[in-house]
Image (tube, rainbow, N blue to C red; front, side, top):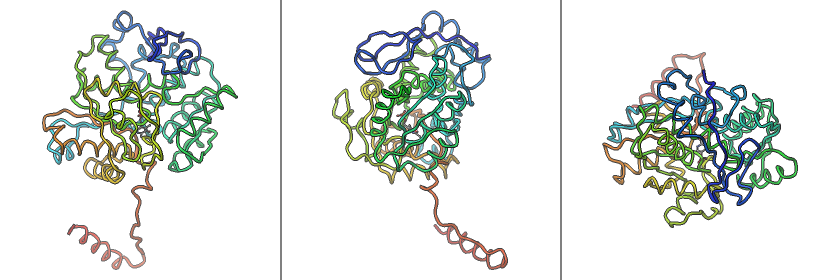
Amino acid sequence: MDSAESCLLQLRCTNCGQRWPADTVQTTCPSCGRVLFAEYDLEERARRAMTPKALVQRSWTLWRYAELLPVRNPVHRLTLGEGGTPLIPSMRFAEYLGLKHLWWKDEGQNPTGSFKARGQAAAISRARELGVRVVALPSAGNAAAAMSAYAARAGMRAIVFMPADTPPAMPAECRAYGAHVFLVHGLISDCGQLVRRGSEQFGWLDVSTLREPYRAEGKKTLGFELAEQLGWQLPDVIIYPTGGGTGIVGMWKAFSELESLGLIGSHRPRFVMVQAEGCAPLVEAFHRGTRHATPWEHAQTLAPGIRVPSAIGDYLILDAVRASHGIAVTVSDQEILDGMVRLARFEGIFTAPEAGATVAALMKLRETGEITAETSVVCFLTGTGLKHIDLIAGDYPVLDPSSPDEALAYVASVLQEAGKG
Ligand SMILES: *Cc1c(COP(=O)(O)O)cnc(C)c1O
């Protein structure tokens, strides 16, 4: 069913424009060191094959878009059910903010609990097809978990480097999948240095964000899916918590490919790029008007996925946000926590702190009037809250079941107290 042929042609450097063969292992541009993008036969083959009618027959994983994914032999398409996440219409939160068209794209429902599964499903499948045996990456947690899971499925060795203060659920999850986990005293950028050296010395494939070409391909399915779920229309505004930036970069590429296929028009949503006050290199560069960002010193935020002091794809992110007439905002850790709690209480969705940042940005833009009652908005909830229970947990009353009357009198007093608030 999802045995459609990939229309992959070659790789092309997003900076110097040079083309490279796609059927050997590539990382960054051999000529200038910047980001390589996959190119497809869009106008002819993909246009003919990937029609809305053909899609209806296919299952809801990201492989439904196989024509525009890099894996040629269906045997190598690893799947754990990634993609096909629900686009949930907001109920109480939309009402609270006075918005008529608000949706949540709940990426926490992916395998390994975040949208990182999309990128790793594509990257590890393609690496397997090209004969790679060992993969490594620096990660704030979710990318490592996803890589480890798909590497386990592929029978590959996975090596993971994480900041030592990563929430403990992340390394535990990687260990469960059989990855070799190393904690590093430092930030994700320090982990990245180790991976780059290690890859040179030992021949691991470095699957760092945008340092190999296919994670972005998996992530662009966020954009395909959104368009398809909205009946080949796009919203006015997309809010996205931005770290390494593959989400925004991938969606931007997706929209342009869909336009080449004739599935959407030239209208584009405005991207809202959200970063934390304690680590906002891209927001700063956006406002300064430069094409590259300055590495952020002493990066600090409780949302690990957006604690990224410098991104190799900074120019791609900034170009996309600008071309979309987008907006760049920062939010504080307190606002992030508040966003998580509100979303859980209003909508029943327990998200990662990065998604709390999305919610916080939504509230800010509603307040400033950039988002009005009529604006259609999609908020990306990039991960599950279940790996971050330390941010929510408190002390719970403990009851003694041997004196039930006393216990229940205590329960009644607590509920009465809560009712007053
Ligand atoms: C990695 C991550 C992000 C950042 O996404 P990019 O597309 O790399 O900018 C946001 N949220 C979560 C939960 C993440 O794991």
